[in-house]
Length: 451
Image (cartoon, rainbow, N blue to C red; front, side, top):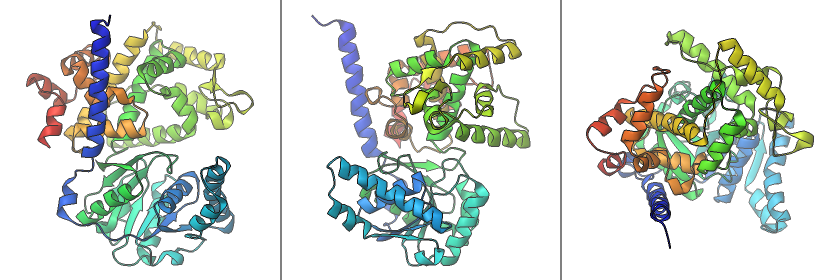
């Protein structure tokens, strides 16, 4: 005989899965689609032949486009060619592609070290190092060589696309296309819409996503857009839990138990700790420049990076990766670093249950999601859900963070935030939108229907 609890779990999982399907379809419903027709795209250029540039190139080739890849010198473009060929060689090894099909596909691929090779392309996707000065230099070159009406896209994960567009004389043609790595496999494509871009360029980006079989989400310009902005705040909550008494391994276990394939510290090790370290340093400098209120900052990850432990690629991060292993083992030296940081800050560690860990982790995620919706960075709560379902491993049966909050009850999420705010009023301050919805007896889904 089935219990009420089992029936309730089945019901909530069905509701979450149904919402995920609806949200993915609805995410393509954007204001610009009705306002303009997409520009025709046949030839694409990709600037950069690293892992991301190669993945984007493969996505474009698989969608039937001709692709010119540009790198800065012969050695770099040779590496780019190897990166692209490696993907197809892997498919051949698995019996999913023939050598003849690989040859036919690569016949549409041209490597080059000259920007002049892309003067006739319809769309350019820049995928170079995540540095504003480097990206501006690339876009000045694109402005010089590309034909009138070419769409100029940046694959930046965090940077201000309005500032990148301002490096050109054609801001109306500049848009963000934030692919997720590996770009030829990951489904999410954040389409980031700067202030001066034309409606037909936005429509073109959504048409490109459809042709590439990606799931597109429209995002506004801010540091990190939808996904990485919310992820950064959620990771801060994990860092606070770490400093307050939970080990990185307990936190990862709790997040996996919730339904994620990996926990936040495993993800850090996979992506490379140096990437987050560079972002933290940039944000700290920006916060000081703005005179922002002094926020709590956990230095454990910085201490680990200072030792050159950047995760899987160095064999050591939050976990130990012996002999090139992909699965990490807990590291007693990391726990010693955590203990030292707690002692330095005068923190007396306390235990956390998996349920307590997830209450904080999800409260931080939902609260920042509410701010992203309130500011118009996401059009609707469902756009936050699709971003996390398709790009960040959020468990599909839970429907996405905003749907999850609706199912738990926004009043309960708000009560958690108010409880946690007694410890840290700045970080845990409830989003005004969340307070408003609770006061009105509404949920996030009511905003999806109103949009």
